[in-house]
Length: 159
Image (cartoon, rainbow, N blue to C red; front, side, top):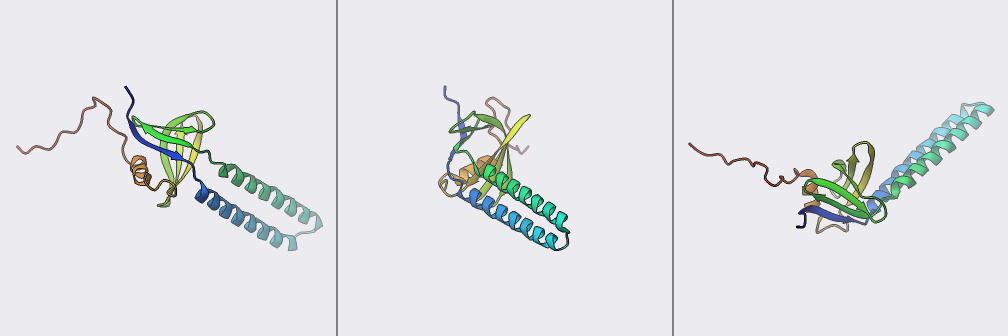
């Protein structure tokens, strides 16, 4: 017998996520550069070298984090019997509780937590999922399906 699928969507497009990361990283690096320029005027020669070195290290770190986060993996996000799983096209299947970290209407940043293991961050955009978008949002925010054989709430009766 095949298990029932409550929700299933293939994640393939990450344009909004990558653009947002590029904008945030550019703002962070520009702010860091402005800070370094302001600090250079008030420092001695040895202090200037420290400011430049710190700005380079922090800028490179910001860029590295942005590039790392931009590598979103395509795969299949599914909820079966109330359990969320993400099966990337390459790699191990991840299972856990699902949380919405950011909801911008046409964009969701979802965290799939696996307890002790590291969480999987899944950027999901409406573009490319138009026909499934409403069902996905309902599944993410809705309660899990009732287990088979679980007692259901009885209707109110008038006595």
